[in-house]
Amino acid sequence: MASVATRRSAETWSRALGWLSVVLVAISVGMIFLYAPSDRVQGAAQRIFYIHLPAAWLAYLSFFIIFVSSIAYLARRHPRWDRLARSAAELGFVFTTIVLLTGSIWGRPIWGTWWTWDARLTTTLILWFIYLAYFMLRAYVSDPERGARYAAVLGIVGFVDVPIIHMSVRWWRTLHPEPIVVRAEGPAMPDTMLYTLIVALVAFMALYVFLLIEKYRVERMKDELAEVRLQHGV
Amino acid sequence: MQDNLVYLFAAFFVTWLIMGGYLLSLRRQVENVREEVEALRREQRESVAASGLAPGAPDSSRVAASEEPS
Image (tube, rainbow over all chains, first blue to last red; front, side):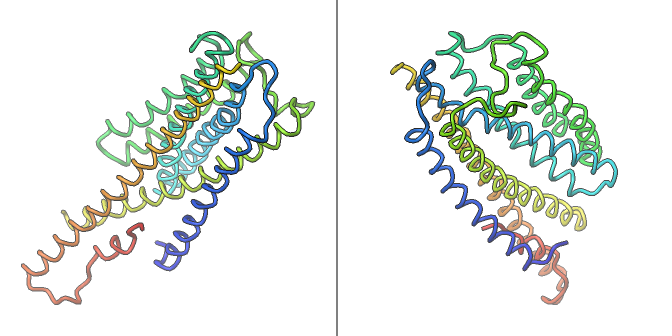
C-alpha cells in the first residue's frame, strides 16, 4: 500500500492536472470558435469535429486500457488492474456517449438525418452497448472476484469492436467519411484546422487523465473500505 | 449556413452537460466514500468504548480515513 505522503503528492499532481486541463479546454474552445477557419461546405457545423474526434479517440483509448488491464488482471489477479479497467470503462462510456450524440447532431445538417444504420455508426453503437454490458455484468454477479473475472473476459473480447469501428469506413460503403487525420498521405486539412485539432486533443487528453486518476482513487478507497469492513465483519 | 450554428452550440451544450454530469457523479461517489469512512469511524469508536479497549489500540479505520479525498 502506498504511503500517505506518496498519495498526498499524487493528489497535488492530480489537482494541478485538473487546473491545467481547465486552462487547455478554455484555450481549445477559443481556438475552435475564433482561430479555426469555417468550412466552405459545412459551415459552422464542421467545428463539431474538434470535439467529436477527440471524444472518439478517447473512447477507443478507454477500451484499449480495459483490454490491457483485463489481460493483466487475468494473469496476475491483482485488484489494481481490475480497478483501472473499471475506471477506464466508466470514462469510455461517457466519451462513447459524447461521440454518438455529437455525431448525430453533426449528421442532421450534413446528411439530413439524426441517425442512419451506417457501418461506422452501428459499430460505435455496439461499442456503447458493450460498455453497458460490462457494467451490467459487474452489477449482477454478486461475488466481486468472479464479477471482475467475467468483466475481464468481456473487456478482452469486446475490444475486437475497436479495430472494426476504425476499419468500417474502408470495409463497407458508408456515409461517414474516411479518416482525414491518420492517413498514409498525411492529414487532409489546412494547418490552422490541424493546430486547432491538436490543441483540442491535448486538452481532452489532459481532462481524461485527470478524470481517470480521480476515478481510480475513488475505486481504490471503495476497495479499501470494503476490505476493512470485511476484516471487522461490519 | 447560419442555421448550422444551432447544431454547433447543441453539440457543445450536450458535451459539457455530459462532462458536468459525470463530474457531479464523481463528486457524489467521493462524498459517499467519506460518509462511509465516517460511519466506520463511529462504529469503531462505539465498539472500542463498548469493549473497553485502550485508545491506542490498532484502529484500521484510520487507514481509510487518511485516504479521504479533498
